[in-house]
Image 1 (cartoon, helix red, strand yellow):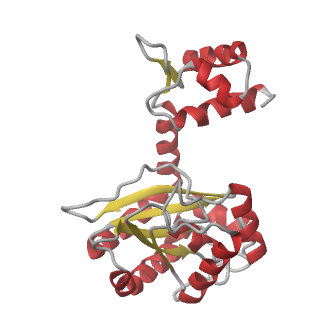
Image 2 (cartoon, rainbow, N blue to C red; image 1 turned 90 degrees about the vertical axis):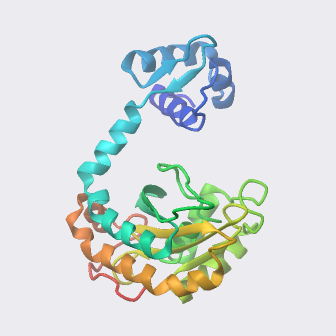
Length: 277
């Protein structure tokens, strides 16, 4: 990392992955930046309110300023207002966690959720993180709407989610990912068991206009012990229906409109919503 802006953003992204904070030396070592430069940048970030220094041991942590900015953006974009009632309905029907991820350039980021589980095991990941395309249910759903070459290029750029880092059933080759994507495309929705995390099952459907790349993805996830393949297959019609309804309503969100017009990560030539994914 050379430029000041690149280094500053690198520090923010690194700290976002360490909620417990990091020492200055650890930040410098991981980003391969001189400690003197890291010290100056952290001092500026503290002064501007994006970072704070923990008392006692000197670790640096993010403040809630970036979170506040993100939540404000989502609120003004209209994404959550449009999606939340539909997510709530699907969560009530499934009894599991329902999430919405949106396509932002080459990233697929979870931005909203609804929890249907009332008791027992609950799967509840942090919002704001990016889906690993190669082994997540949402990633497969997005890739199924792209040209194979374009999709595999995104996977190669992000890197494979290996079994030792994610789930024991995570694909270990691009061909294995491609096979899963083809099955997803044929089915109309993705099914994963133990690919993203051990003991986790999930299913996802793309939110898109007919024949075009996804603007977002709706996912239902739960513990494999109760969210079986049979349960997922039985829930598929409801998942596809909710995805279609969100596509139809997406015109009310400036974010979804911009995504459709720019076509990221593909080109949109039709704004006809999908009713049979």
